[in-house]
Length: 407
Image 1 (tube, rainbow, N blue to C red):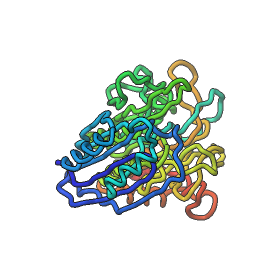
Image 2: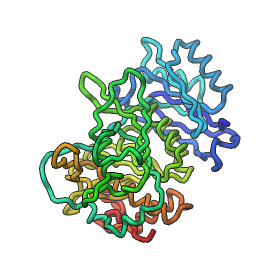
Image 3: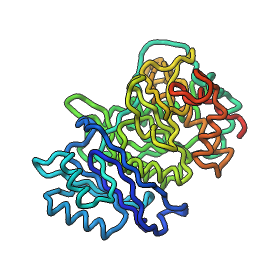
Image 4: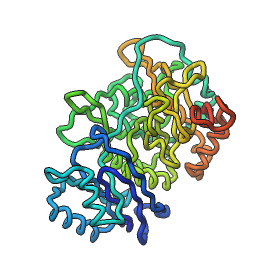
């Protein structure tokens, strides 16, 4: 059954509006979103799918009204999906020739003044890789050892939204990995290096000290990243990420790792909010735009656990974002991961710090199955080793994450 919420997106502003609610598609209570408007100073065209209007709508009659308006104004419906687990219908319309995104915003706001409006934004993975040597230190800093590893014997479902993974990698066993692509046909699929690295960090299989943090977990990989030519830009869109969240809800994952980031977006904000309401924690990379970089989403959204990176000496990663949304810090500079073809590679970025916090959240979820994402976040903050200024700060958040051994 579709709930009575209407969300419309086209580049520019973010508005949430709630009307009366019918029972949602799951047993949990419906989302509660307060009216909210976020004005954006300008639109970077490289952050948007060109000329696309995104619509989320949960009322079939209003969907027909949107279709009628769009057709009359020369918009072309490009695609539509029913997302049963989010309880919404998502559509994309093409802006008529000669019309800018801002003009489209104005048109739709005039016709539907209570609808949220936003673009089909692009999101990027938040890491780079190195091929030089350094000491392995990540597991030690977060307190992950054989005792903690025994905590994960209970079945645990981990969600991950990323690039595809290298299915034949010797450290990734097919029996505990499920994959689903959310890329359109004829799309150039992004290289699998980033997703494979994150997957190995989470569930890598090995008898050595280089095993993944959660080798007994079941991993659900939502593949959303393409490679856009001619500049070989690796990116995902709002359209794909929202569908990925819908799929992961259906798989009843315990936590979701999102080593990606980009602009604020009404559709993504709704999907993230609804996912959190299903008692699924979301852990996201804080971004690699530097100390003065703009906030990265979904990490900066309320309720999401934003992760920054630090090195073996507990220094902040040079390129990591800073801000009041930073929640926790984790090892993310020169993280060694085997590549299956040689001695392995070293990777840096908030992308590769995020799995450590995902693991910590997952272990808490095993011990406290009924805890909400807010309760999980509160305990992680309490357990963290304070760094920098006393208490929470804009560089390290609450400090270095620690993985609980009390399962």
